[in-house]
Length: 78
View 1 (cartoon, rainbow, N blue to C red):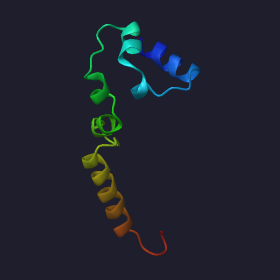
View 2 (view 1 turned 90 degrees about the vertical axis):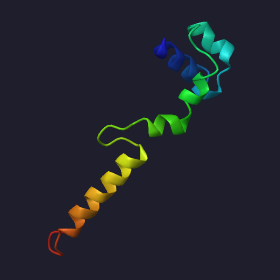
View 3 (view 1 turned 60 degrees about the horizontal axis):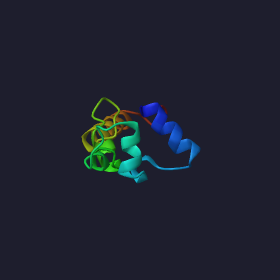
View 4 (view 1 turned 180 degrees about the vertical axis):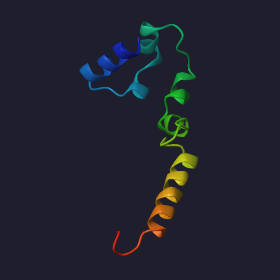
């Protein structure tokens, strides 16, 4: 199902979150109004909590790690 939706978007130069609910339901009756909140960009970004993910806490940890690394470098190493 997901692959078919992606293929539809590519073929029609469409964005998933802009597809009407009626069209989404042609692929699965499980789609409801809550689908738009689930696929919103902010939901997708904040949901990526794995190492290297895009949620705020992960990005802040990555920045802190790089700052610590750079702080330990000497002029010759940089």
